[in-house]
Amino acid sequence: MKQLLNEYSQWWRFKSTSSLKDYLVEQNIHLEPYFCPSTLINAIMDVAETNYMFLKGNSKVIVPDTKLQECLNSWFIFTDEIYTLCLPHITIASDEHSFLLTHKAISENLHLETPIDLIYKDPSSLFWLHPDLN
Image (cartoon, rainbow, N blue to C red; front, side, top):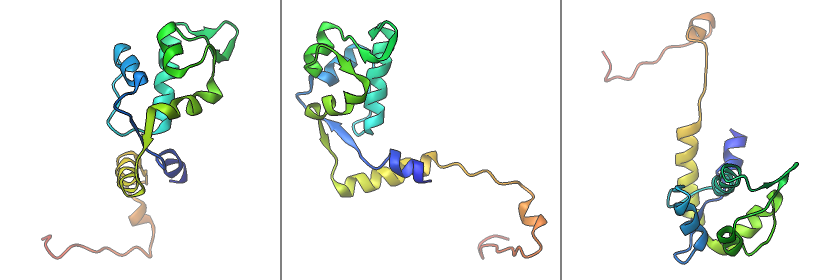
């Protein structure tokens, strides 16, 4: 649960003038209107991997094509710095909106697995049925 809370704690949205958004659309990558930083970083990493942009022998350095160089204003991209390079292209969602998005994302991605017969193995288990149920 804590991992999901950390992953979905911050939400971004592209600025209307973002060249990075246009670049990703050209690369056939479409993000939701609001997305987590990790989603954008993973999208850039996918583009780099698909287009063989990683420096040979070093998966921590990306040698971007001309358009990505212009978007991120960098000749070389260190994977640890992608977050910072993306900041001029995004706006951060408000706290209220982030709370709603976080709640929705966690409820969609939280999976609990329990044994089906757990309730029968525990002698202290109590059953409660909603009054509307027969």
